[in-house]
Figure 1 (tube, helix red, strand yellow):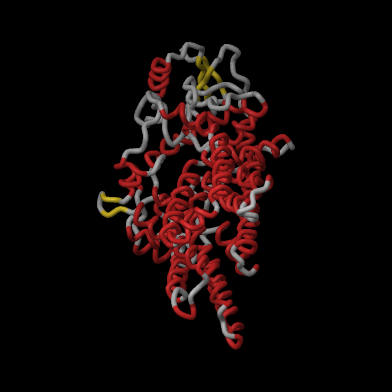
Figure 2 (cartoon, rainbow, N blue to C red):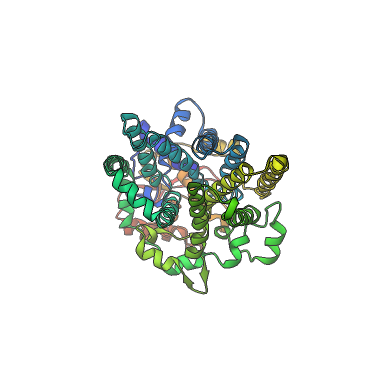
Length: 501
């Protein structure tokens, strides 16, 4: 389905589809906002499709390109701006690009979470734009504007990653402001004009680039209700989930399987335990006396750890109580959030950055006689953290050849057909796959389908109802939606079309 969403935007660029109304849940209009829209990834995807790659190869190549961009951006941020030695930065890049929790989340079907790869790119661009501060140049303005626009477009690609990143940035901003409140006032007073120029630039770029998000998601605001608090609580993590890195993790899988109840894929996203513990221990050990870090390093490490810890306090539940109840009323957009533990996907970035800064400082203050030992110890810590990310989960597979053959076997529909629905042809517990097959067929033959599958569904649409007669369900949707054109049915087993009476 997520390959198909990129394919839809490719069709939009070709002029064969309407941007906000993909041909699913027909005749309901403006349904793109029911899905993650993949706006940023659709650009390289479309380039690959125009170059002749099929949808599945294009999607795989896009994920590879995004992971490469994430790793390179992380490396640049660590070496150029955080003054971390290259071999530590390389390990940090690997820990941010290929963490256990992101592998698990993408592996259970949410490859839209891989839009996380855009975050380090945005950070690198923003820091690049601030290199000459307080001097403002055309280059700095363009770089800051590009970073801000990319962040706005991230909302139109995956709302969760964009919103969770914004929440962590808010936490970091509050912690930094409290830690540097005296210096911050002086800094603001001395740099008011350049700060105003950059903030105005960033705000204008964000507002312009946020327009696609409004076009995509405002139509579904009238269709789909916002998440209820009870729905959030159903998916909220418990305190035990602090160690829940999934039962397939190479190091901790057996522990998780024994002590943590399996409650679904939304609870397997904790940052790996040893990496977190080492970061916490080092932050305490290197915070005082002769071991104390430079002020900026200390504040950044404190803010990073605060993001992880406050994130847990705000999202976990005890009984039916959760700090996210307050977040829902204070932070714009929180009412659309169902799974709070996805915050850990972003928190992993902050923990890795904190660990890299701490290890770098620990090596810098090492006496000459012990520098070699400390290097090996730091390398051992990072090596274990990398091994800690290995996950043995067997992801579901799609046979590309089978999918392409399935689509190629679909005969042309009768000329009278103006829309269609697909007859069920899979097991009852996989009906959602019937819906996605129909969506792919609609893309293949350029005919809208009444079928669909998403995180939300249009009011009155219930074709997924397991205990209902499909003919009656289709008739109900036709009557509810006011559809007047000729509807056809498609039997994927017999490869036959029929007019729906």
